[in-house]
Length: 195
Image (cartoon, rainbow, N blue to C red; front, side, top):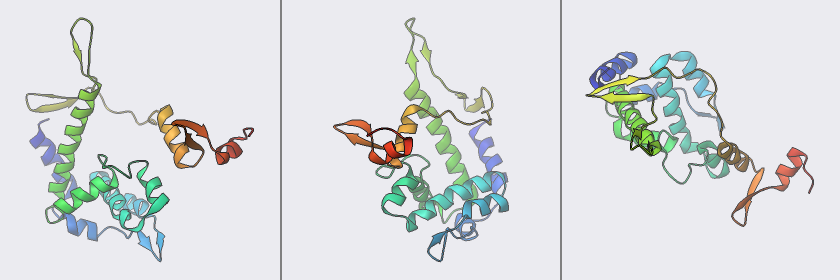
C-alpha cells in the first residue's frame, strides 16, 4: 500500500471534523480535582482509529494536571526527554495541528509511525560476517509501497528485565547506590527480604 493509500484509508476512518472540535468533544480528564476515567469513556464512545487517537490526546491533556512524582510515574521514565508518542510529544503534535483537520493529524501520525519503524530497524541493523546486511523489521518499503511481513500478535508484549527494573524503581522498590541498583527498604519489606 502506498503512503497516499494509507492517508486515504486513515482519513476515511476519522471523518472530516477539525482536530480542535474532536478534542473539544472528548470527555474531561479531571473533575472536582480528581482524574476521570476519560480513556474508558473514549473507548466506549469511539471505535478504531478515532478511539486510539482520542486516548493519545487524553494522555497529552492530562499533563496540565500532573506534577512531581505523579507526573514522573505517568510519563514512565520519559519525564526529562521527549519520547516518540509520549504525552509531551503528542501535545506538541496537537498544538501544531489543532487548527487543521483530524484527518491531517491522523496522516501526520501515520507518517511519524512509518518513519519511527524505519529508525528502529536501522538502529537494530547488523552486518553478517559475509557482508550481508540484516534489517530486522516486519514493515518494509519498496518503491514507495509499504507492506508488512505479518500481522502483529494479539498476545502480551514480552517484558524485558530492564523494563521490570525501571518499573520497580518507579515504585520505590529499587534504588541506585554507587551507580548500581539495590533493593530499597520498601522493596525489602514488600519482597520479604532480610535487611
